Length: 297
Image (cartoon, rainbow, N blue to C red):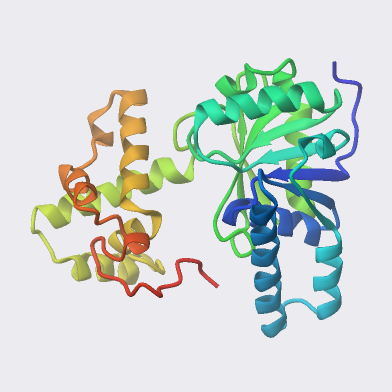
């Protein structure tokens, strides 16, 4: 049972991949004590190495000092032991985008963590309410959707589940402020929340234009970049996201809303079957060198 307003001082991040490492770094730079946990120690070390490399880039660009880097690193403790999370105030889960995995994790966290601990998920599409239902603290479960790369992008979508309390939302918003992020409230869960619900149909429409041979891919991307002031065109962005990820998310929209505007173009499925997944596979709408760095600096 909730026992009054308790400040968030110590946090844990589950998953030491690109997103988990980025969230842990942001929290540590904000002065929080952070536990970074993954299933195996080599995964934790990979996450810590990612953080170290990012901080070094920031030093080289005079964004932070060596002293600030050392302070950030000292604020992070790596572990594989879930019981180390017993006394944290906030857990941010950033593991694989799989509902059954997340539900299992949240059930374990609910049994392990103290009664005031907030449990957040970094999911970009899954139901907060369904995840929360595995716990006895549904009012203290919410979505905190960070964007990649975390050290550059300031947005965090704060998503309320059916039972998420206003106090939980306020704590999440305050946490975002303290780590230099801007929390934007999504009043109720819906597939794609704000950004992806707008972005994915935008990209999908570009695929329709390309498949209809209305314009070449370079012309489509150039038109959007010059006309709308975007850094990447929609087909370039599709390749960066991964066509398989894009396709599955749009299918999820279609299944949830039952609205034809969320129908993915069949070309996406054809490209996926051919192994043309985008940047990570070396070919999507464009071809990429195997040494292409998929992480923005």
